[in-house]
Image (tube, rainbow, N blue to C red; front, side, top):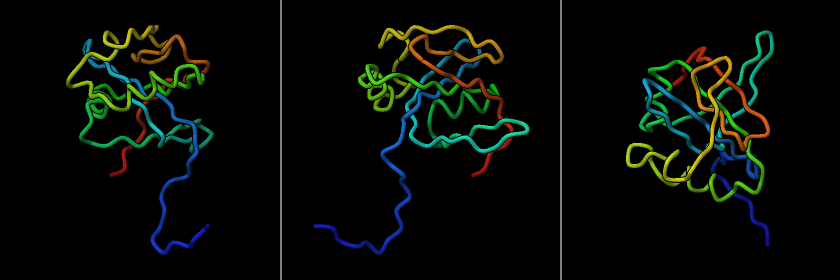
Length: 127
């Protein structure tokens, strides 16, 4: 039975979970993210929300670039694994045998399984 709730809900799920990639001075990481969206045109802008405590955030902060990779459903196990392990503890690319190519416009790994990917430059950070 449905019941009303009084507290605010900040989730808009189900939604597509993307994989955010980052790299700095040879260190790279990939993490699952449900918090991402297209935020503007002229110029085209895409936004992500990443906790400041994550390894990915530190790589993005240092490099100023990131990738947003959209994977097919057959990659759901990998997406789950990328969201439950920290890149500080393991090299996810080696541990999960992730194939990637270098970005064409930014120094970020682009997953070869991605059917679409954005290569992004940090424009601004809101905390």
